[in-house]
Length: 215
Image (cartoon, rainbow, N blue to C red):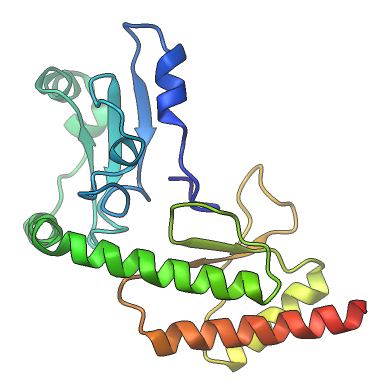
């Protein structure tokens, strides 16, 4: 899942043109735990076999801890252990963090379905309301909401309005992305309906001001 807007890579289309002996390395930092019926990420969401996919995940997003993992076959694991300087030369995770990661995986295994349902409901609620308010929100499966405020002065005004509403406005400039940058909100299963309504109200009010100026 791409971090800038919550869209996913078309793995099915990629695999169709991939040579039969080829592999795809998938950076699924944002998809693991959030996408798929059981939270296995983009490959599960795209309903493709993992046979020709090496999936890299982070434990700092859906899992809420630290570190990462490379998912693949036993043969791949042995090759990584034998040849990867990152694995051989790096300091391993401290035991408390490793244990926290294991517990997080177990929690998602037991409660992941309910958490993902809440996550998807929260994301759909926000996206639907913002579209109704006049914001252009892409149709993506991820819980990421990108907002382009327009000019620099409009971006500063929106930032001021959000801060006044008690909302920290994450503003990002990704390499190769919008040169002016944009606001990026990531919806969580832990957000309350009151928090989401507060975000919607602040953004809807700002959009009404912008639209009235353009009339």
